[in-house]
Length: 148
Image (cartoon, rainbow, N blue to C red; front, side, top):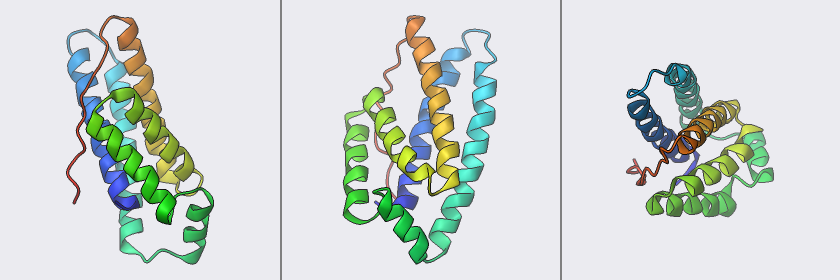
């Protein structure tokens, strides 16, 4: 799995979570899903634009060095992505979100669109927490999206 694949997997996983939240909030009158949808659309656009740039160009030495410094290149990247893959296969929401947070946190200092995706994820975590406190604990049983 490379960085482009990571962003596809992360985006698809967050989309599944968003859909679950949207379905739950349909039962109540809440504008929260509308606000999350604005963040979702922004994250989707920026991630699509950013991954097109990543996949369309040969990686510059400067970018490669920045990614290496934050542990997002080579064997270290592979190990982090394999840990994410294991969390996705397990399907437990909390470890998935924490692992995404770790990876996106490392990437956000290097790739601006990673920060946008991380903010969307963090806002959805707040929503999940509020549902849990209202007695609607979420367990999504997310499966890893198929790799391209």
